[in-house]
Amino acid sequence: MNIVTRAALALLLLGPLSAAVANESALRLKDGPEAVTVRANCSICHSVDYIQMNAPFMKRAGWDAEVKKMMKVMGAPVPEAEAARIVDYLTRNYGVE
Amino acid sequence: MATRRTILQTAVGGLALAGSGFLGNLARAGLPPGTIESGTLETLPGKQPLLKRSFRPPNYETPVSYFEDVITPNDRFFVRWHLMQIPEIEPAEWRLSVGGDAAGREYVLTLDDLRRDFEPVEVVAVCQCSGNRRGLSDPHVPGVEWGYGAMGNARWKGARLKDILARAGLKKEAIEIAFDGADRPPLDATPDFQKSIPVWKALDDNTLVAYEMNGAPLPHLNGFPARVIVPGWTATYWMKKVISIRALAQPLQNFWMNTAYRIPKGKFPLIDRFASQESDTSTPITEMVVNSLITNVTEGQRFGAGTPIVVKGLAWDGGYGIRRVDVSVDEGRTWEGADLGVDLGRFSFRPWQFTFKPRSKGALSVMARASNVQGASQTFELIFNGPGYHNNVVQKVGIEIV
Image 1 (tube, rainbow over the protein chains, first blue to last red):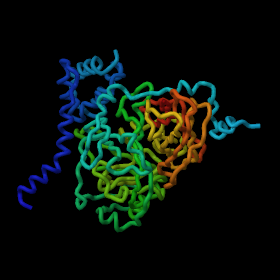
Image 2: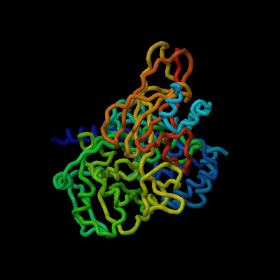
Image 3: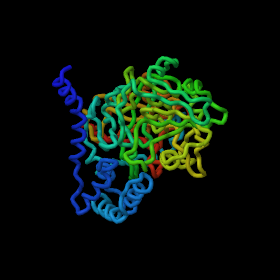
Image 4: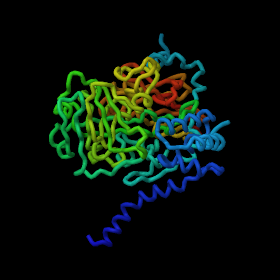
């Protein structure tokens, strides 16, 4: 197999995969000053559709428990100050007050 | 003299509420709005379009319309992962290590060894996520908000786990068999996904390490090259891309056993126990509850008056066997037995169908309720639990006769 064929094959194999990656990067969080903070912290381990999917039915306490679980159980390195802002953002945009 | 109705009510024993009007108020809980909005159809490599719940880790469910056959094709089978790093494994590179502190010795298997050294056996079995239908919980609970399609039924071929364990030799103090897969968390601090089952379940003839699914290698996202098959039990124990099997003298301690995948004790009519992992108040989830799915009639569908309507579906349970499926088209006042289809064994989906001719035009609803040989059946009201497991509420699909 020459290098051109292999490159074409690699592209072909990557096609659907890169499509999936492209679809994830197309996910849009609701506008807000903390949207960037949320994406930066949460996207380390999972796509942000986890947030969209779990909405809107959680109260502040529910989102607070989720963020604490990610930090204390799943080991997410979220700075404490940012955690409070993330809970605010999630409650306001993806929760019920 | 018994009327037709009393006969029917007796036939579905325990249906004391029939005719009381209660069933007319049966909740039609739906998915959260955000789940519907973000649940797009997406095509993963080697798969038909599936309903995306999350891109990463990949969680995709099978659309209900795909369940037209008793066997779920590999390219339609749901996908569920906890951790985002899922290596593509070269068959020649894969190794399965077998051992543990309650095993006589340690050894390693290649894929060729696994296929060649043990008697190949086949079982048709339902693989259903513990949280299937979580998204229909009322009130909603956090998690992957599955609808009806986090399940599938396949013919699995592989080696018996008990034969693999026999080569290592189990010590008498062995109480659990633990599995690890090749998937890894993105951070060192994240608990790796490892699970265990009690020794008695591991030694069951039907518990396998499978290397074929419906006559083909397992798809990458369904666990290539080998996964554990625990017929009757929910999919949390069916370790994908299994690379380690360990016999333990002590209960496995980790987040995935001690905190996640647990149900309150005494709330569900289950038989299988996982004694070494039970606490005072909770127990690990074990076998699936009796359940059914209407596969060919959708909410709001219109049918012409005067023509027979054929309702089709699937029924399954925790491996005891489906005894009957009853269908009601009059708000639960009367129930009639559906015809059961091909029997591929007690761990398989059991297809069923029911034909009726609507008497008049207007709205009506179709309900189906499966019962198993143990006498257990589906509930009319959700047995609520925080993690949203074991949702087997009777479906109610509203249709219109025009």
